[in-house]
Image (cartoon, rainbow, N blue to C red; front, side):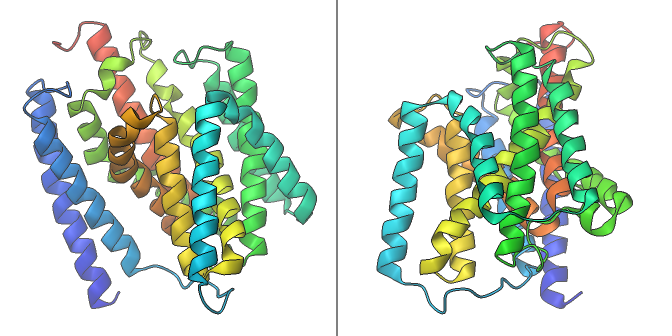
Length: 337
């Protein structure tokens, strides 16, 4: 390990430890509303955690395979602006039903690229899709029938993962270790360790969400087992929000930009668009989008890109799991409101 990477790791560890202790203390003191006096310290702690994490991840970033020899700034800016406008229009016009179109996009990508997958890749994508679908049966925060929601998760995850991997392989990113799956590349043991690592790493972010009042909105959590449903967004949202959409935008941008530039732009745009989808929309949601995107979507996105799919799933799972546990305690009167 070189000195720069070691230094960034020690900084991340120190910030992670101090933030975890401080945020845990705020949670135990009963701070769990956005208008409490603990909101500003919580936001600052999460911002420091995010900065330390991104610095650490950047220090060990693998090289991006070159594509365009240089960035054509005018064309790149126009194409990027067009992509942003299209994404915003889709959110405004279509809204949440947009999710039903994503499996079709995944199938179109597979039909065009005609990739070949190993039996392990096929089985793993199908297993994650099935797990997300089963967990989706218990989701009570959605307004559509449970079986429809569960089926949608299967449709999002299976072609989403395969299409995303196909684009990553087609562009050479997957071969460079970017956006890979540790289960497929290294086996089940490293994948499970990375999943557990993602859970542990997410601790201050999860506690910060509680301090900011996120658990108060989850009134549907009434049974002890319901927090485990967090695995559904952990898998499905990583599949379509990261593995599918980031490579898809990268594929559109790479003819007019250096690969590193196109990849960074794709990750940033999709992270904040993903955050925007989690708001009520409109101009009034810009502040919430900036907060969610910076503090939660960007860390998860870069973890997927640099540390693998299972690390990102573990990180995402922890955020929702801790939130749902806190909601259960609040809803059952086991934690003073």
